[in-house]
Image (cartoon, rainbow, N blue to C red):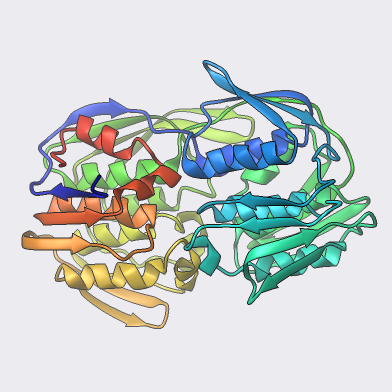
Amino acid sequence: MNNHINIRQKISSFNKQIKVEGDKSISIRCVLLASQAIGKSKIYNLLESEDVLHALKSIKKLGINYEKREKYYLINGFGLNGFNTNKKVEIDAGNSGTLARLLLGLLVNSRKEIKIVGDKSLSMRDFSRVTEPLKKFGANLISKKNKLPVKIIGSDYLRPIYYEENIGSAQCKSSVMLAALKTPGITKIRAKKSRNHSELLFKSIKVPIKIFNIGRYDCIEIEGQKNFGGFNYDVPGDISSSSFFLVLTLLAKNSSLLIKKVNINHTRTGILQILNKMNANIKIKNTKKYKGELVADIFVRSANNLRSFKCPKSLNSSAIDEFLIIFLIAAKAKGISTFEDLGELNKKESPRLDIGVKFLRDIGVKVVRKKDNLKIYGNPNLNLNGKFSMKNFRKDHRVFMMTCIAALTIGGNWKIFDSNSINSSFPNFLKIIKNLGAKIK
């Protein structure tokens, strides 16, 4: 079976309504926290992607049972000491940096050696950001060159720590937060603002947590070794997945789209702010609050006069997973768009900053790069002819989806490889896009 697709024509006009799958970040956190609860948890609309399925397989290897019911996943936890770590276990995190880093936090009190492995892409990513603070709790972590595989042996004498997170990494912050659950006393965290799904989940399940906002930082205090009961959670739609359809609609002709029940947590809406500043026509409807998260419908129309934007660094964290698709919008906008301090993109599933710049240049867009800063010279009349291909991108799901959107809106005859990469985060991507009218072979 060929692992590539062909796109040879632009998408036709559409006026439709869709619903994207559950938020991946929240799905993984729900699985891990349900494994630590006492009793049964019901997780509705859990994203059934490879990353989340790896999370379910991981807790099962550690002695936690789960069942897939018609409308939800049922997870039966045994409390903060409920993992069975009386024997050596190897856990495969697949492509999920979120799973690997957060799970290490929950293993700081493991009795035997637990080995975390991942696929080729994940095994190239830096893990020192979490192994170093977790060592301060008292756990023993071993890795070569700070990469997977990582071996962890926990401690019976964990001690609370003070941790400073200055990058804006929700994964690193959350790993320490989960370790704090297992640790007696109060762990204190000073973290540059980033996604706060873990904090909201902690509050909703009654974990003792205090949060203070100080400028660009959140100061978090967590009282450890406090068990909590099973919980129910309905995972909202993923805004990162939605972003591809927002841009598809903006760049398509005479089209409109309503995306139902999307998580619009303020730490994730950088793309909405950026697109609206670029003269997009995006409206938020039916906003509701659910366990601390904001959930709403997003309506978008085609945009005929996109303009350039000077993106402030303050939006980097809240748009970190969407910059590839934002670059595509900048390529079609009038004027020069600028972006600063995007080095964090190269620490994702693939070196996204490098790949994004190369992609734009390959399709004829002028890009000036100085270290981690970019100037993208937009061309509203950009229209491709001829043959193009996209491969060798470490099977990064977001690179694949961005390329599909480019092919469907800018034109050209495209052969896009590694179509199964979307299974890690958005298995139904191609199905939804075909239902909107895309011709994909």
